[in-house]
Length: 325
Ligand code: PMV
Image 1 (cartoon, rainbow, N blue to C red):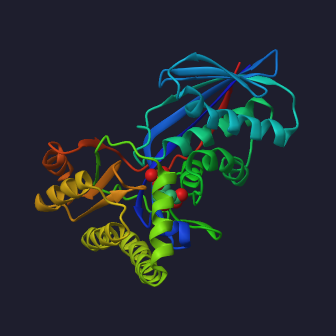
Image 2 (spheres, rainbow, N blue to C red; image 1 turned 180 degrees about the vertical axis):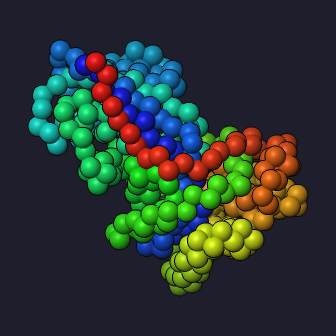
């Protein structure tokens, strides 16, 4: 018996970082997916093989590396944590062979770890005879996400689970915005890897140093996200672009931007993008630009000397899982 699951990566359109402090964020699932395949094994060990070129076996507290460098364990651990969370939830004794393949670039803000966590939970559940509800998948994926990001808001595993475009508010959950006008988005990847956990901690430092200033920025961030919900419903691209630019000012103010991001954002705006901002935790990683309709190619061309343009579509499809004989 084999079970498999796939789930999407994401772009945060509005509200990253501020979402950790209770502001709403708006996030879309994208048509780049992580796929996880699971098989049972005779012992109680968990073997994880990733297409990142790392592989190893977790057997109780021991880790045996099969391939990859010294960071193999750190890269594979979240998959093991996700699988163990399911095994414990279902109270079943089993070992697993897990294979992970992903089309989502790692550590650049496109939700790779969240998608892998969600697909792992879903596939292991399937294998063990349980089709989890989306709420269960969200809850069980929190543990691996905490391992990777320290204090995440939960936005990544939420969008990977549900798909579509949603408004996410920590502690209040989600509203499916139901808007799938295909937004003319262009992603630019700086290729600069960074840790979401470190950036969230950096923003926490900013807040602790100047709580009043942070509070003012947080109020503006909340307003921007609320205005963006309305603009999305009206499919008002001009307004969305303006709001993205305003959101970028706030992200810059809290120190989340990066020179390479700033350059690409400026290039996109100069070549006619309606708005541009970083997406995800920043500090490197990716930016997004909203192109006028039909202009995604020219915007992509304008940023290509600075960042790698990635073309994506928003997708409604959240996590899916299936059994193979
Ligand atoms: O992991 P990233 O780069 O997609 O960042 C997630 C968004 C943050 O708001 C920075 C963190 C969080 O947990 O919400």
